Figure: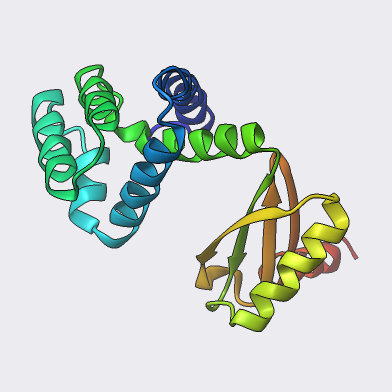
Length: 184
């Protein structure tokens, strides 16, 4: 698999280009909605993740697959053209990084802060509200929160805001304890 920092860098450049184009066409909200739909599709479909990541599929196959998905989902023409360009340039595997970077650019343009909250189990509405309130107080801005479930953290939460990561997961606490015991 590709180096994450390299993928993110490529994703950031493509996201900036798409953001500039969407801004020029006054379609930022529409393109962002399309990308959120794609993000959900990627999360829900193992076949789509394999199509994007596997070198066994060529640029043409990826372009056809993404084109069919975009057509069926009724995505905006700007988003469709962008997906075709991404696939034609052999960068379809960076789509998730592009989506994340675009969401960050859009949130920054609106003056809100994006935060990703990772938990071992899905957050209840009360827990999500509590996390949002804590972030609002800590950041001084209303956060736009995306949540993700990762059972490997065992418990607690991880919150990422920009390049900052607050890790209150049980996994990291156990790893710290293990490290401390090894040094003793």
